[in-house]
Amino acid sequence: MGKVIAIDGPSGSGKTTIAKLIAKELGFGYLDTGALYRAVALVLRNNSIEPEDSDEKLADVLGNTHVTFNNCRVFLNGKDVSEDIRSAMIDHYSSVFSSRKIVRDFLLNAQRDAALNSDLVVEGRDTTTVVFPDAKKKIYLDASIDERAKRRYLQFTKKGINIFMDDSKKNIMDRDSRDASRDIAPLKVAPGALLLDSSNLSIEQVKKKILDFIGIVS
Ligand code: DC
Image 1 (cartoon, protein in one colour):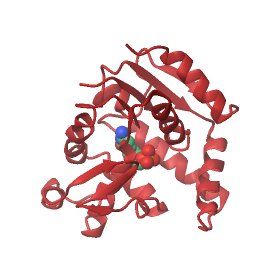
Image 2 (cartoon, helix red, strand yellow; image 1 turned 30 degrees about the horizontal axis):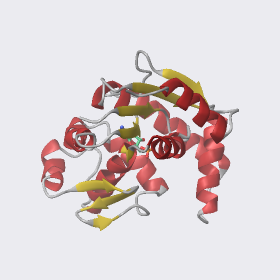
Image 3 (cartoon, protein in one colour; image 1 turned 90 degrees about the horizontal axis):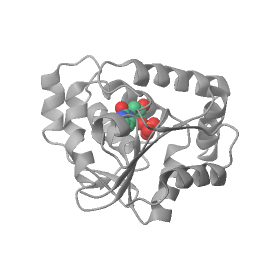
Image 4 (cartoon, helix red, strand yellow; image 1 turned 30 degrees about the vertical axis):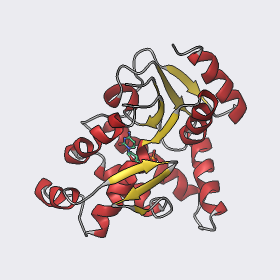
């Protein structure tokens, strides 16, 4: 098992940008667990599965589903779906379907396997608490709701997708409350985690604070 640095936090907190930079700096592999949940939401929706459908229905689809993450790209049964999973629709359904135990169980080993033969920086909602409770270092990255809504708004408009700032804020608040209040593996601060608010920090400042916290990983 490789060394694991785990970073959790709500959407828009800057986890992805920072986790990639830290992985590069340390020469570790990188895993975006949210991308796996997004790919699962995509395959479920492609098969017309509704959030309230039975476990059996979900199991039928998941039984024929293979999700992998490689080189910052996510593959669904061998097809690169890295762009398809970044829609407002999948923002919503990934948060909804990720509260289902059958979905979380389906992805648990895939996440742990990523650290079998490689040192890893991993990011998500429960990577510090459930997936890698023994991670060498744990970080909880946060930012104010207004800052996170602004970041999501800019991400969408940069891609040419028109959304209103108010809608961006509402979407983030809905996902926050769903991701943090679900029964299984809710988003929370793990004991011993560095709690960092990135609202008023540059990416470089956040990176430095995290690298200082990590120190030398032996
Ligand atoms: O990090 P993200 O926004 O791409 O994640 C999409 C959704 O997936 C998020 O709203 C909740 C879910 N998720 C999760 O439940 N557990 C994780 N470790 C990562 C993501």
